[in-house]
Image 1 (tube, rainbow, N blue to C red):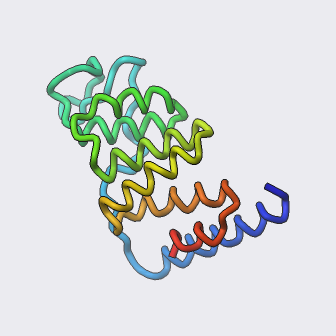
Image 2: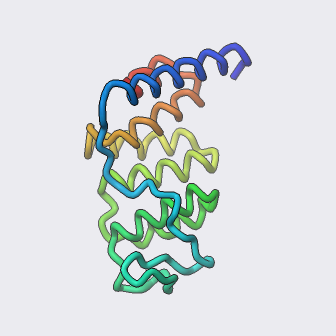
Length: 152
């Protein structure tokens, strides 16, 4: 991506994000909190007990697993995030697909990430977080028109 393209993308992305904030509330499902503690590799944070437990624990809900995987991804632990997502029973939720897309994109597999984002959008077209990340992926690819469409 050239410097000029990067600047234009940054301006478009910033403008679209600002417009989305000003235009009113958007409801995104999933926990976007960065306060979820991260545990040692092979463990998962159980939101009920507020403790780290073995990743294979049957008592941890899919939602808890997905939220924890997202926390790992936000902490830069992308491979671990994908491993936790692999333990989620219902792989076909907008959140799981979005978080899988996020982790794969951050690993440099942008096209694969986009494919997960598109599946997530199909499951929940109103899910704001996936639209944001899909827009970011399109910016990475230099597809600014597609990015702008996602960030409306």
